[in-house]
Image (tube, rainbow, N blue to C red):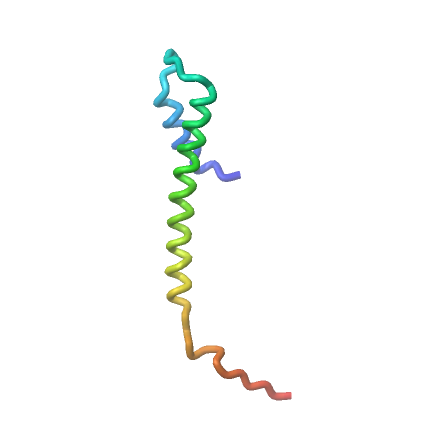
Length: 70
């Protein structure tokens, strides 16, 4: 289980005052939205690094000719 986004969710939770009239549903929605936002940012960074890695791995001269001897 990935718990890297717990701190951001807790900061969102701390932003709500316990004495305010915020319902449990809207609080859960806000925390879920904060976690989803962080997850999307992480996925974008991983995708960018994967694209960069794939661009660097292109070697057109390898694999063009295969010699098979029996």
